[in-house]
Length: 198
Image (cartoon, rainbow, N blue to C red; front, side):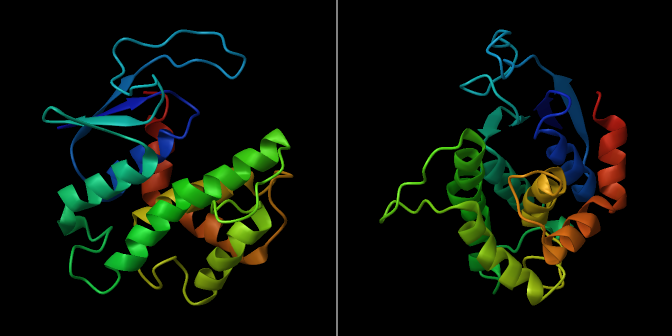
């Protein structure tokens, strides 16, 4: 059984959503995390090397970082069809969007939140508006990032956009708003919210 190390009202909630979409047995282990103001201590029960969430444990294997967890779970449970398998035509796009999430989109949001200048050049960092452009283009071709088929990348992006759509971190976008609403309207998301507190 998968154990999800979770703290309420954090990004680990989206993995309750993914696990509900997968339809597999899992358990939630609530752990303490350090707060934004620096208070709190690392929870010794949490296997994440920095004491953050999410992290999962599966038969002795620990996986942490959102993109890695999404890939691990969809490869582990291919029957769910929530991630293209090796050799399938959309596998490359799936891997690219997973990497883009943690390597491009999150750094763009963090830079804007911290009001830091984004370094230009070959480092790969871009401002939020640039980071969103290829996402809006992809969503213009289908209701989800891989077209007609909902996948684990939509769990990452859709929940992020639902969280930020009323925030000054992101300009208003009808395409992104509609996508976020499609994502969080799914029954599995509603079940995740019901279990979010443990």
